Image 1 (cartoon, chains in turn red, green):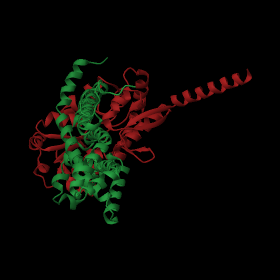
Image 2: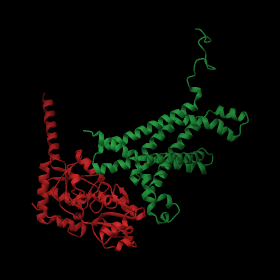
Image 3: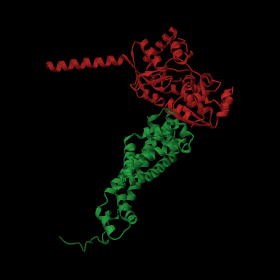
Length: 267
Length: 245
């Protein structure tokens, strides 16, 4: 009898500890292969803009962040399959995605650019309409599952759009000359152009901003939360608002992008 | 709840990518078989200068993951300016070309060992009998060794063919628009993982069923001595002539 009671007490204590530990941890889904947003090392440690945003939110919520690294296109299905609590992966807030998941308030918004070879005539063109006219029919690289992929498919209907599982794979193909251009955000190109392989390339002169096509590009980056999890959504929003007011979102943005892409909290 | 209207629409879209999957499969199967014949000829050679490189090739391609081989050929080779400026770039620039090459190189490693197993199962007596009736080496290979090897290797080779059909799905990771690649595109737009992958799985299932049936038919054709013969056929006792016990 004593043994049974002891086993029961120990079991209950273990379960309570596990539940408590789970409550003190926020599991974060991120890509881990998209510099400078999120870079996972061999030990699974994640660094980058997304990681800093997630860690800042976690410290505001007084919980510990645990990262789960997956390819970008699998993040939303995995969130819905309860594999993690939130997505922090430069996830644009779009109407299409809102049917699948809920979002926090936006915390940042970055301009996007096409990248072409330095000697390309497109490099000096001064209007986005003209750039897209010249690129239509060419081979363009994008990362699978992103708003950028949807934007290119919509605006360059005659182009061959090649989709990649990771940003690094797209950059490798751009270097190799398998694609004529690629489309992504400003920070990706800032980092890429500094590399030896990226030195032959340049961003086009004109940026595409979310306001240019909000239905596709969305309304800034937000933290993805499972539908109906209003308690967590409220906590995350409060944390982001607090970080915004303290100026931490701006600090993180400047640390990784050298520019302030933070979106101020309107609450 | 599964939406069957969406699934039928998805199935049609995926079937549009089936020719790519099929050409990937048949191209790499044919190329892999040709390469395997060369590798196996080297492997069974008495000259170490031929047999050791073949052994190394088999060990290399059977001992490393196909995905890594594919990435090395597609992303790896593309990093070298020497490769990009060579004649090889005509093939290596295209994702399809890289996928076929990596699938063929990999399947050749496995197929070479399957064929070698078939060769080793040819009874020594059969070869000696052929030599005794004055068959040349080529006639012996064509009339005795070849058919027996083929018959012995077919069951294992059908398994390799099935694995190859499934391996073509990896080509989507090097931007080939095969059935899996199109499935991922549909998921990207709809987020309906379950229905889309069920449709893709069905296509691969049917494809593999056909491969297995085709190989079984070839096996049947090549093994007349193992078939059930009708009563009264030569060599088969009829009820009247059958010995009574």
